[in-house]
Structures are given as C-alpha cells and as structure tokens.
Amino acid sequence: MGEIVHELTVEELVLRELRALRDGVAGVRGSIVATSEGLLIAHDLSDTEPTRLAALVATTIGLARQAMLATDRGGFHEAVAKGSAGYLAVYAAGRAAVVAVIGGSELNVAMLHYEMRDTIGRITAYSGEFASWASPEMVRRARAPDA
Image 1 (cartoon, one colour):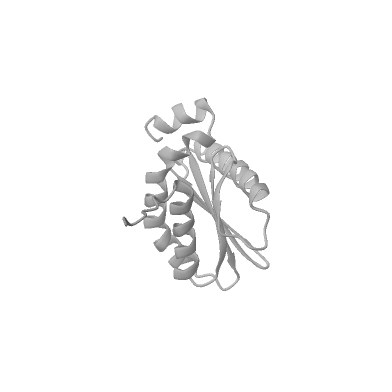
Image 2: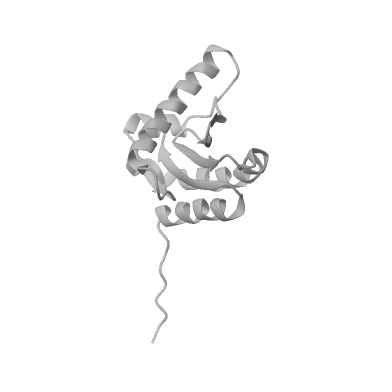
C-alpha cells in the first residue's frame, strides 16, 4: 500500500508560521494574516474574533500607508501600538497581505521584530496564493513593484 501524502494548503502553511511565532516569542498571545482588504486568511487567536480583527487591521494598514505617503517616509512596513494591557503590532506582508500580532505587556518587542523578518518573508512568498481572497484591483497592485 502506498503512503498517503497530504499537501498543505496555503492556510495551513500560514497557520504553521503563526503558531511558530507564538511558540518562539515570549508574550505573543495570538496573530492573524489577512488580505490588505481585510479578508481573513489564517489566525492563531483564542480570545479575539478573527474576522473583525482582520477588517480592523486592514483599515489600520491602509491609514498607515497613507500617513507614510503624506510624510514622504516611503512604503509602510510596520506599526506597533502599546496599550495598558499589551501590544498590537501590524506588519505589511508585501502589498497583498497584513500580519497582526497581539502581545501581552511582557512582550519583547525587539525579539518580535527580529523574528518577524523571516516570518514576513515566508508569508509574503505565500501571498501569491491569496489572490483568490482579493479583488482584481488588489491583485494588480500586488503584482506592481513595491513603493
């Protein structure tokens, strides 16, 4: 009998990245990957509604990109907000996707940034598969050279 090989879907690959991030960086409570339009791709959240967060994070990244353009600071890469109970870090994963990480107040933000470099690279590599979640306009913009 032959061995059954299960090829991982893009959602499963992204979820592996999110779980590795939680396991590898102390203080990470959960994370999501969404299209830049706010459609959920994958999440590693237990106490936050992921679909709503995906939409909110897409709005955040849209505003941050506009602010970067208005101040002539180049293309958006990341934003970190600190609240009384922890952090929300938002990262661009190419032009078609966004990664958001929720951290507790003990989160080591420097370690998160360090780990996110490789994580973002891998998620960006998968983002070509996100086209089925995005509008045709977003797919065209994602294929254009980054600003």
